[in-house]
Image (cartoon, rainbow, N blue to C red; front, side, top):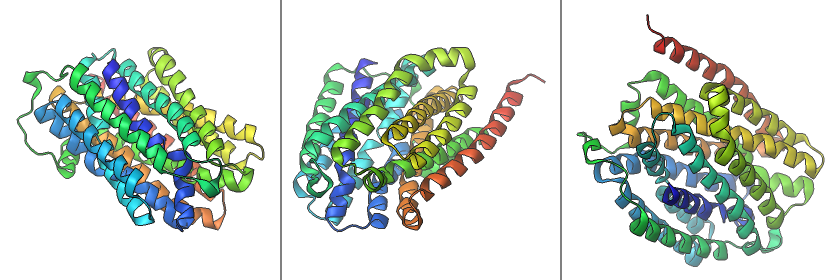
Length: 392
C-alpha cells in the first residue's frame, strides 16, 4: 500500500502542479474562456478513453508492468509540455498525452482491491484518496510558487519539469519496491481491452452501470467548478496563481483529513450508501457558498463542504463498485468507474466557459441542479440494491 500511495500522489500531483497557472497561461496565449476550459477538459477526456484499457491490460499482464510503463510515458508527456508547449495547440496536445497516461489510476484502484478484503475495502480506497488529497495539497502549493506571481506572468514550464521528474521517480519506485498484487489465478480468460467492451461487461449489472453514471455526473459538477475557479476568483477577488495555489492546497488538505483518517470510521458507523448521498448534499452546499460569497472567507467555507463531499462520495461509491465485481474483473470495473469520472471531468469544462459568459454564477447554478437530481437517482439505485440483496 505505501507504494500505491506514492504512485497516486505522483500521478495526481504531477497534474496538480499545473493547476494554479495553466488557465492564465492559456489566456496569455490568446485562448478565450470558452476555448480554454475545453482545452483543460481534454486531460479528463483522455483519461476517460484510456482508463478501462489500462485497467483491462493490467488484468492480463499484471499491475506492475502497466504502472511502470504508463509512468514512463507520463514523464515524456510532461517533458513535451515543459520544453515544447509554446502555443495553445501544443499545450493542448501535451494535456491529451498526459491524460492518456493518467488513466493508470484505474490500475491503482484495482491493485487496492487485490490487497484488501471486503471489510477493509473502504479503508484501502480511503488511503488512496488521501494520496490524492496530499497531491492536491502539495502540488498546487509548489505549482503556485513555480507558476508566477500574477496572472500576467504565469508560466507552465517549471511546474511541468518537476512533474516529469516526479513521474520518473514514481516509475522507479514501482519497479524496485512494488510486489505484483494480482495472483496468477486471477488472470481472466477474456482478451479484450477496449473501453466499449468494458462498458458492455459492466452493463451486465445494470445497477452498477447506473452507479457509474452517477459518478460521472457528480464529477461533471465538480469539474465545472474547478475549471472556472481561476477566472471567477480573479474577477471577483483579484486572485492570481499564488492565491489559487493556497485554495487548491486547502482543498487537498481536507481530502487528506477525511479520506486518510475519517472515512473508515464514518463507513463503519453510517455505511457507504448513506455517505454517498451525504457527499452529494455537501457538494451542493459548497457550490452555492463559493458562487455567491462576497468575501474570501466564504470561498473557503464552501471549499470545505465541496472537499468533504467529494471525499466521502468517491470513496463510498468506489468501495461499493469493487464489492460488486469479481476478482478477475476488478481492474476492468475500476477502469470503467475511473473513466466515467474522467468523462465527467472532460464534459464539464466544455460547457463551463460558455455558461460563464452568460453570467458568472451560472456554472454553479447548473451544478447545484445536477446534485439535486443525483440525490434522487442514487436513492433509487440503493433501494433496488437493498432489495436485490434481501432473500425472497
